[in-house]
Image (cartoon, rainbow, N blue to C red; front, top):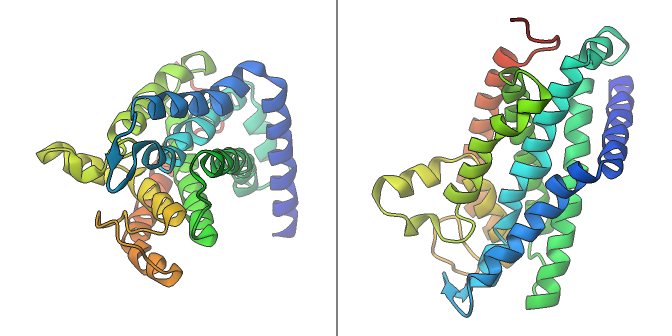
Length: 265
């Protein structure tokens, strides 16, 4: 167990080093979602959403959108490229266990994602004077969100023929995360079936929990009432349960679709 943890940490450090050395990946994974967040805030003007400034509402939902870039897109590219270059096969045949190999990449993505969330928190504090109300709940939501999208990335890498096509493979998920998730609007604002679909998306509970943890208000039921720290945890329980359910589904998909060796044919 200790050896697997050490291997995972080494792989995470390697992944982070490679990201910082690749300007294209650094832009797409780190800077692009922050730029899109800025664009989203510019469309809000002086609008109020769910009783708070529209800009603040959007920014506290952006961590959900970031999962699509820092975790999902990043890891689909990583897993696919390493599979086609036989790196995954060599790693699996060495000392690290399969869990350490996949967990190391997920740990690197988690560190990258947390860095983005910290930058976002600084941004929110500077523009709106708001600091996260419940940091432990925020970290739990972040960890579960990264676990979910890392497993989805492992599954999608299995249906991606090569690294060149990875951007096409991830595009539908990225669009769903950007458009369907309640980042710029409450899930209840969508009519009929669209609202049902938005609430069922795996990223929606992450957005709702993170927004509640940031603002200390109940954005899980849509009431917007101020909650104590304990009240936030209680309100988040259904969303956390949904997240865990999605993680189980994603784990089954990853086990079924993930490939350690290059695709043939």
